[in-house]
Length: 385
Image 1 (cartoon, rainbow, N blue to C red):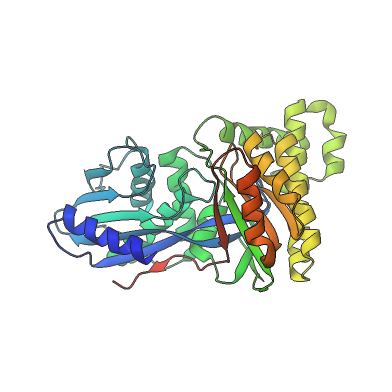
Image 2: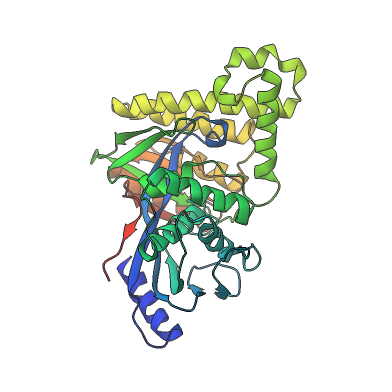
């Protein structure tokens, strides 16, 4: 990240009168090892924070105005926005460019105030649209920046919830809590089993030197603000209602089969994925605890197949990446990760075959993938400038 921070400092000086920023913060992206589309159903997820970060560098100003420049590759134009901070009776509202809505939403829902004006530059190594949660990384970085300007009570769970609310109201994505939660609470060397109903977190060590996590970006861009994500969520809520449950977390396969005649085929399959995925995730957590990577990998593959067939959020490129990875000895498991419709796969494998796996994918995949061989990172924090 050092080179990005240096470049962001140069851009800041260029945009804001040659001065140096006084405050620097960062928040990580994440990869979800297993537990996809379960968070908004009150289920379990098993993500880890990544050493891919969004950083914000800036300085407060005393006129209440906010000026922000983004350096994020792929962000929509314009890359600079200027607006007045929220005031009593004059809340912020979403608009264009889209990237600024994530920032504005967090400012609007920040849990302390009044927020002073500020100048800031955003830089990021989290790929946009890659399913590694560039949006939550930006939201949590923004909140962390505001904490330096105007401290709140420091409650990390409320911080994550405020960032989730920003995504709901300003970006229009009815996401679950996983992405914001892991970006705030990520722990170096650990994946986190998160109970998305109770918000209880169980850290699981992921430090075996013989193990690696390979992320492969298909470089197929996905947009979750389309109809697919809200539609999946609505189908799950409809299924839960028919089953007489508050969420699908409370249902099992027997409940689902008993009500099959009352559900559309689509809602039945969506619910079947969620119910099975919640069980897979808790089983995967147990497998990780006992170091049973083969079992963990088997559950990853089952998760991918369910996301492809029952939840229908995969795509040919992701299916191809998974199939290539699974041909290679030393690969335990592979699956799509994130919301779907493009983005990345995550592969659990022996560290000794990580480079071979990258080469094989490059040879066989019809697209132009990018790779990250990675370990679990820490959550958001302050940068020394």
